[in-house]
Length: 323
Image 1 (spheres, rainbow, N blue to C red):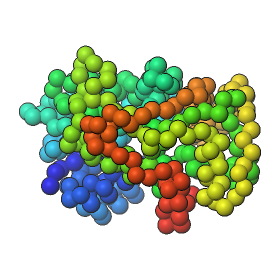
Image 2 (cartoon, one colour; image 1 turned 45 degrees about the horizontal axis):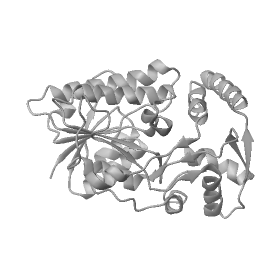
Image 3 (spheres, rainbow, N blue to C red; image 1 turned 45 degrees about the vertical axis):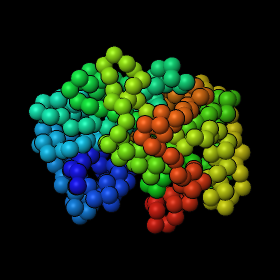
Protein backbone atom coordinates (compact mmCIF):
# COMPACT_ATOMS: atom_id res chain seq x y z
CA UNK A 1 0.00 0.00 0.00
CA UNK A 2 1.28 3.45 -0.99
CA UNK A 3 0.34 6.71 0.70
CA UNK A 4 -0.74 9.08 -2.10
CA UNK A 5 -1.21 12.79 -1.44
CA UNK A 6 -3.73 14.35 -3.83
CA UNK A 7 -4.17 18.10 -4.17
CA UNK A 8 -7.40 19.15 -5.86
CA UNK A 9 -9.14 16.02 -4.58
CA UNK A 10 -12.50 17.81 -4.35
CA UNK A 11 -12.46 18.69 -8.06
CA UNK A 12 -13.69 16.83 -11.13
CA UNK A 13 -10.49 14.93 -11.92
CA UNK A 14 -9.57 14.68 -8.23
CA UNK A 15 -12.76 12.85 -7.31
CA UNK A 16 -12.16 10.26 -10.01
CA UNK A 17 -8.48 9.91 -9.09
CA UNK A 18 -9.22 9.35 -5.40
CA UNK A 19 -11.64 6.55 -6.25
CA UNK A 20 -9.15 4.97 -8.64
CA UNK A 21 -6.32 5.13 -6.08
CA UNK A 22 -8.47 3.63 -3.34
CA UNK A 23 -9.62 0.87 -5.68
CA UNK A 24 -5.97 -0.05 -6.24
CA UNK A 25 -5.42 -0.37 -2.50
CA UNK A 26 -3.57 2.90 -1.94
CA UNK A 27 -4.03 5.05 1.13
CA UNK A 28 -5.00 8.59 0.18
CA UNK A 29 -4.37 11.94 1.85
CA UNK A 30 -6.09 15.05 0.52
CA UNK A 31 -5.13 18.66 1.11
CA UNK A 32 -8.42 20.57 0.94
CA UNK A 33 -10.44 23.45 2.29
CA UNK A 34 -13.53 22.54 4.38
CA UNK A 35 -16.58 21.76 2.24
CA UNK A 36 -19.32 19.19 1.74
CA UNK A 37 -17.00 17.35 -0.64
CA UNK A 38 -14.44 16.99 2.13
CA UNK A 39 -17.09 15.22 4.20
CA UNK A 40 -17.59 12.83 1.29
CA UNK A 41 -13.85 12.20 1.03
CA UNK A 42 -13.64 11.28 4.70
CA UNK A 43 -16.57 8.90 4.22
CA UNK A 44 -14.45 7.07 1.62
CA UNK A 45 -11.61 6.66 4.10
CA UNK A 46 -9.47 9.53 2.84
CA UNK A 47 -7.26 11.30 5.39
CA UNK A 48 -8.02 15.01 4.92
CA UNK A 49 -5.59 17.73 5.94
CA UNK A 50 -7.41 21.05 5.98
CA UNK A 51 -5.52 23.82 4.24
CA UNK A 52 -4.64 25.12 0.80
CA UNK A 53 -1.69 25.90 -1.41
CA UNK A 54 -2.47 29.61 -1.74
CA UNK A 55 -1.87 30.35 1.94
CA UNK A 56 0.41 27.38 2.55
CA UNK A 57 -1.70 26.25 5.51
CA UNK A 58 -1.50 22.51 6.07
CA UNK A 59 1.04 21.85 3.29
CA UNK A 60 3.87 20.60 5.52
CA UNK A 61 1.52 18.29 7.38
CA UNK A 62 0.01 16.95 4.16
CA UNK A 63 3.36 16.06 2.55
CA UNK A 64 4.88 14.58 5.71
CA UNK A 65 4.00 10.91 5.11
CA UNK A 66 3.34 10.91 1.36
CA UNK A 67 5.17 8.34 -0.72
CA UNK A 68 3.96 9.99 -3.94
CA UNK A 69 2.12 13.23 -4.68
CA UNK A 70 -0.39 13.88 -7.46
CA UNK A 71 -0.86 17.62 -7.92
CA UNK A 72 -4.21 18.48 -9.49
CA UNK A 73 -5.19 21.70 -7.68
CA UNK A 74 -5.43 24.59 -10.12
CA UNK A 75 -7.50 27.60 -11.11
CA UNK A 76 -8.83 27.41 -14.67
CA UNK A 77 -10.55 30.81 -14.60
CA UNK A 78 -10.24 33.85 -12.36
CA UNK A 79 -11.09 37.53 -12.16
CA UNK A 80 -7.51 38.46 -13.04
CA UNK A 81 -4.27 36.98 -14.32
CA UNK A 82 -2.77 37.64 -10.89
CA UNK A 83 -5.28 35.24 -9.31
CA UNK A 84 -4.35 32.52 -11.81
CA UNK A 85 -0.67 32.95 -11.06
CA UNK A 86 -1.26 32.98 -7.29
CA UNK A 87 -2.90 29.57 -7.46
CA UNK A 88 -1.16 27.85 -10.36
CA UNK A 89 2.41 29.11 -10.11
CA UNK A 90 2.79 30.19 -6.49
CA UNK A 91 0.72 27.35 -5.06
CA UNK A 92 2.75 24.82 -7.03
CA UNK A 93 5.99 26.45 -5.87
CA UNK A 94 4.89 26.12 -2.22
CA UNK A 95 4.13 22.45 -2.72
CA UNK A 96 7.45 21.67 -4.41
CA UNK A 97 9.40 23.60 -1.80
CA UNK A 98 7.73 21.58 0.95
CA UNK A 99 8.61 18.36 -0.87
CA UNK A 100 12.19 19.47 -1.42
CA UNK A 101 12.54 20.11 2.32
CA UNK A 102 11.97 16.44 3.13
CA UNK A 103 15.06 14.31 3.70
CA UNK A 104 14.02 12.03 0.85
CA UNK A 105 11.51 13.91 -1.33
CA UNK A 106 8.65 11.82 -2.76
CA UNK A 107 7.88 11.56 -6.46
CA UNK A 108 5.61 14.31 -7.78
CA UNK A 109 3.14 13.92 -10.66
CA UNK A 110 1.80 17.23 -11.89
CA UNK A 111 -1.33 17.51 -14.04
CA UNK A 112 -0.67 20.45 -16.33
CA UNK A 113 -2.51 21.27 -19.56
CA UNK A 114 -2.00 21.59 -23.30
CA UNK A 115 -2.54 25.30 -22.65
CA UNK A 116 0.93 25.34 -21.06
CA UNK A 117 2.43 24.21 -24.36
CA UNK A 118 0.18 26.42 -26.45
CA UNK A 119 -1.27 25.67 -29.89
CA UNK A 120 1.14 23.48 -31.82
CA UNK A 121 3.57 23.64 -28.89
CA UNK A 122 4.51 27.23 -29.74
CA UNK A 123 3.98 28.61 -26.23
CA UNK A 124 1.05 29.79 -24.11
CA UNK A 125 -1.42 32.25 -25.63
CA UNK A 126 -3.61 32.85 -22.55
CA UNK A 127 -3.05 33.95 -18.98
CA UNK A 128 -4.21 30.51 -17.85
CA UNK A 129 -1.71 28.79 -20.13
CA UNK A 130 1.10 31.08 -18.99
CA UNK A 131 0.30 30.38 -15.33
CA UNK A 132 0.35 26.62 -15.96
CA UNK A 133 3.67 26.93 -17.79
CA UNK A 134 5.01 28.91 -14.84
CA UNK A 135 3.90 26.06 -12.54
CA UNK A 136 5.90 23.65 -14.68
CA UNK A 137 8.91 25.97 -14.43
CA UNK A 138 8.58 26.01 -10.62
CA UNK A 139 8.71 22.23 -10.65
CA UNK A 140 11.64 22.18 -13.06
CA UNK A 141 13.56 24.57 -10.79
CA UNK A 142 13.53 21.85 -8.09
CA UNK A 143 14.19 18.93 -10.43
CA UNK A 144 17.55 18.27 -8.79
CA UNK A 145 15.74 17.48 -5.51
CA UNK A 146 12.20 16.38 -6.34
CA UNK A 147 11.71 13.67 -8.99
CA UNK A 148 8.76 14.97 -11.00
CA UNK A 149 6.65 13.99 -13.98
CA UNK A 150 4.42 16.45 -15.87
CA UNK A 151 1.31 15.36 -17.80
CA UNK A 152 -0.38 17.68 -20.31
CA UNK A 153 -3.87 16.39 -21.11
CA UNK A 154 -6.17 17.75 -23.77
CA UNK A 155 -9.83 18.48 -23.00
CA UNK A 156 -10.86 16.14 -20.18
CA UNK A 157 -14.38 14.71 -20.35
CA UNK A 158 -16.46 12.24 -18.38
CA UNK A 159 -19.09 12.07 -15.62
CA UNK A 160 -19.20 15.27 -13.61
CA UNK A 161 -17.21 17.35 -16.10
CA UNK A 162 -18.07 20.95 -15.19
CA UNK A 163 -17.43 23.05 -18.30
CA UNK A 164 -17.82 21.61 -21.80
CA UNK A 165 -21.06 19.65 -21.50
CA UNK A 166 -22.92 22.11 -19.28
CA UNK A 167 -22.23 24.77 -21.92
CA UNK A 168 -23.05 22.57 -24.92
CA UNK A 169 -26.20 20.78 -23.79
CA UNK A 170 -28.64 23.71 -23.91
CA UNK A 171 -27.21 24.87 -27.24
CA UNK A 172 -27.47 21.42 -28.80
CA UNK A 173 -31.05 21.14 -27.56
CA UNK A 174 -31.73 24.52 -29.13
CA UNK A 175 -30.25 23.25 -32.39
CA UNK A 176 -27.77 26.11 -32.84
CA UNK A 177 -24.18 26.12 -31.58
CA UNK A 178 -21.75 28.99 -32.11
CA UNK A 179 -18.25 28.41 -33.45
CA UNK A 180 -15.50 30.95 -32.79
CA UNK A 181 -14.16 32.22 -36.10
CA UNK A 182 -14.27 30.48 -39.43
CA UNK A 183 -11.84 27.65 -38.67
CA UNK A 184 -13.46 24.41 -37.58
CA UNK A 185 -10.98 23.96 -34.74
CA UNK A 186 -9.03 20.78 -33.95
CA UNK A 187 -8.86 19.45 -30.41
CA UNK A 188 -7.39 16.57 -28.44
CA UNK A 189 -9.58 15.01 -25.77
CA UNK A 190 -9.18 12.37 -23.09
CA UNK A 191 -11.63 10.58 -20.82
CA UNK A 192 -11.12 11.22 -17.11
CA UNK A 193 -10.72 7.48 -16.46
CA UNK A 194 -7.82 7.32 -18.91
CA UNK A 195 -6.26 10.46 -17.44
CA UNK A 196 -6.40 8.94 -13.95
CA UNK A 197 -4.79 5.74 -15.24
CA UNK A 198 -1.95 7.81 -16.70
CA UNK A 199 -1.54 9.83 -13.50
CA UNK A 200 -1.25 6.68 -11.40
CA UNK A 201 1.11 5.08 -13.92
CA UNK A 202 3.34 8.17 -13.68
CA UNK A 203 3.64 7.70 -9.92
CA UNK A 204 5.58 4.51 -10.66
CA UNK A 205 7.39 5.01 -13.96
CA UNK A 206 8.34 7.46 -16.67
CA UNK A 207 11.22 9.88 -17.09
CA UNK A 208 11.44 12.79 -14.66
CA UNK A 209 11.87 16.42 -15.63
CA UNK A 210 15.25 18.08 -15.93
CA UNK A 211 16.20 21.67 -15.26
CA UNK A 212 17.98 22.01 -18.60
CA UNK A 213 15.50 20.15 -20.83
CA UNK A 214 11.93 21.34 -21.57
CA UNK A 215 10.78 17.99 -23.00
CA UNK A 216 12.11 15.17 -20.81
CA UNK A 217 9.54 14.01 -18.27
CA UNK A 218 6.70 15.93 -19.97
CA UNK A 219 3.90 13.78 -21.44
CA UNK A 220 1.06 15.11 -23.63
CA UNK A 221 -2.10 12.99 -23.33
CA UNK A 222 -5.04 12.39 -25.64
CA UNK A 223 -7.27 9.64 -26.96
CA UNK A 224 -5.35 9.69 -30.23
CA UNK A 225 -8.25 11.18 -32.20
CA UNK A 226 -8.34 14.65 -33.72
CA UNK A 227 -11.74 16.08 -32.77
CA UNK A 228 -13.37 18.87 -34.75
CA UNK A 229 -15.91 21.26 -33.22
CA UNK A 230 -18.81 20.24 -35.51
CA UNK A 231 -18.09 16.58 -34.74
CA UNK A 232 -18.10 17.24 -31.00
CA UNK A 233 -21.48 18.96 -31.30
CA UNK A 234 -22.85 16.14 -33.46
CA UNK A 235 -21.72 13.51 -30.94
CA UNK A 236 -23.53 15.32 -28.12
CA UNK A 237 -26.67 15.56 -30.27
CA UNK A 238 -26.53 11.83 -31.04
CA UNK A 239 -26.15 11.01 -27.34
CA UNK A 240 -29.20 13.15 -26.61
CA UNK A 241 -31.22 11.65 -29.44
CA UNK A 242 -31.40 15.05 -31.16
CA UNK A 243 -30.72 16.23 -34.68
CA UNK A 244 -27.24 17.47 -35.46
CA UNK A 245 -27.22 21.18 -34.59
CA UNK A 246 -26.34 23.98 -36.97
CA UNK A 247 -22.88 25.32 -36.20
CA UNK A 248 -22.81 29.08 -36.69
CA UNK A 249 -19.46 30.86 -37.14
CA UNK A 250 -19.13 33.91 -34.89
CA UNK A 251 -16.42 36.48 -35.69
CA UNK A 252 -13.78 36.58 -33.00
CA UNK A 253 -14.26 40.32 -32.28
CA UNK A 254 -17.90 39.53 -31.56
CA UNK A 255 -16.85 36.69 -29.26
CA UNK A 256 -14.54 39.09 -27.44
CA UNK A 257 -17.38 41.58 -27.00
CA UNK A 258 -19.67 38.86 -25.64
CA UNK A 259 -16.96 37.67 -23.27
CA UNK A 260 -16.41 41.23 -22.03
CA UNK A 261 -20.10 41.64 -21.29
CA UNK A 262 -20.18 38.24 -19.57
CA UNK A 263 -17.29 39.30 -17.34
CA UNK A 264 -19.01 42.56 -16.42
CA UNK A 265 -22.15 40.65 -15.50
CA UNK A 266 -20.07 38.15 -13.56
CA UNK A 267 -18.56 40.89 -11.43
CA UNK A 268 -22.01 41.89 -10.23
CA UNK A 269 -22.62 38.26 -9.24
CA UNK A 270 -19.08 37.64 -7.94
CA UNK A 271 -18.56 34.86 -10.50
CA UNK A 272 -16.24 34.24 -13.42
CA UNK A 273 -18.03 33.18 -16.64
CA UNK A 274 -16.85 30.15 -18.62
CA UNK A 275 -16.70 32.37 -21.70
CA UNK A 276 -14.20 35.09 -20.83
CA UNK A 277 -11.60 37.06 -22.71
CA UNK A 278 -8.81 34.71 -21.68
CA UNK A 279 -10.75 31.80 -23.18
CA UNK A 280 -11.28 33.78 -26.38
CA UNK A 281 -7.50 34.21 -26.65
CA UNK A 282 -7.27 30.44 -26.86
CA UNK A 283 -10.15 30.27 -29.33
CA UNK A 284 -8.18 32.41 -31.77
CA UNK A 285 -5.96 29.41 -32.45
CA UNK A 286 -7.52 26.42 -34.22
CA UNK A 287 -5.01 23.67 -33.41
CA UNK A 288 -5.12 22.22 -29.88
CA UNK A 289 -3.95 18.68 -30.59
CA UNK A 290 -1.24 16.34 -29.38
CA UNK A 291 -0.20 12.71 -29.60
CA UNK A 292 0.33 10.30 -26.71
CA UNK A 293 3.33 8.48 -28.19
CA UNK A 294 5.72 9.34 -25.36
CA UNK A 295 3.19 8.31 -22.71
CA UNK A 296 2.58 5.03 -24.50
CA UNK A 297 6.31 4.33 -24.59
CA UNK A 298 7.26 5.35 -21.05
CA UNK A 299 4.05 5.01 -19.03
CA UNK A 300 2.41 2.10 -20.84
CA UNK A 301 -0.53 4.42 -21.54
CA UNK A 302 -3.28 3.28 -23.91
CA UNK A 303 -6.57 5.20 -24.14
CA UNK A 304 -9.61 3.00 -23.60
CA UNK A 305 -12.61 5.32 -23.89
CA UNK A 306 -13.76 7.54 -26.75
CA UNK A 307 -15.71 10.78 -26.47
CA UNK A 308 -18.88 8.92 -27.49
CA UNK A 309 -18.25 6.34 -24.75
CA UNK A 310 -17.76 9.10 -22.21
CA UNK A 311 -21.00 10.82 -23.21
CA UNK A 312 -23.02 7.71 -22.40
CA UNK A 313 -21.80 7.72 -18.81
CA UNK A 314 -21.79 11.51 -18.41
CA UNK A 315 -25.40 11.81 -19.54
CA UNK A 316 -26.69 8.85 -17.54
CA UNK A 317 -28.99 9.97 -14.68
CA UNK A 318 -26.71 8.49 -12.06
CA UNK A 319 -23.57 9.74 -13.77
CA UNK A 320 -24.17 13.45 -13.69
CA UNK A 321 -26.39 16.23 -12.47
CA UNK A 322 -26.18 18.04 -15.79
CA UNK A 323 -29.34 19.80 -17.00
